[in-house]
Length: 71
Image (cartoon, rainbow, N blue to C red; front, top):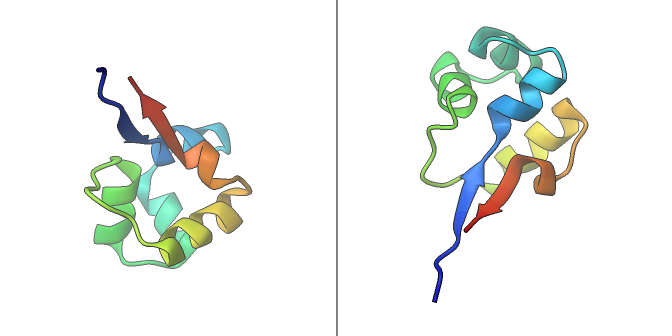
């Protein structure tokens, strides 16, 4: 049985929208610098629904764009 892993793709989606730094993501989403830095580095163990919703709205995407399943 092969295990699947959910991969966070915030940085990839942000870069495809022209957001090339954590600072730009911070300003776009109006969040603390530390939060934006973790998002931008895809350095997350979990992400809340409200954060996911905010990112989807600001990056004009869906959760399927931000989360991918790797096998």
